Length: 87
Image 1 (cartoon, rainbow, N blue to C red):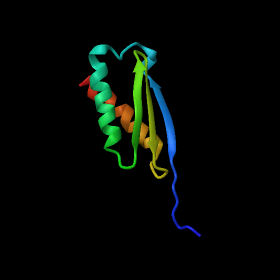
Image 2: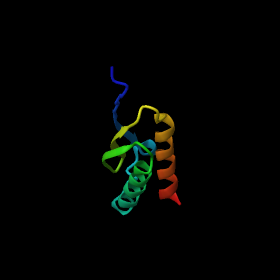
Image 3: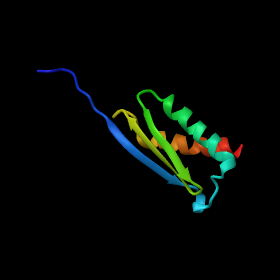
């Protein structure tokens, strides 16, 4: 019997801007995606597939390990990106 196991969890994460206002302008889009990409790939075991969106929301496709608490991870992405763009 094998003692090895493998698991993979794929996520499609999306969130809207506050009140779904068109806040993601071309002027901040590159900085926003760069920040999110950096935070995602520096998280151990997380693999970023794609990131994109429009003026009112963001889409992220990623693979995460089963031991990552997604609610904390997404909260940090949302909060950190908002802070980074607004400073």
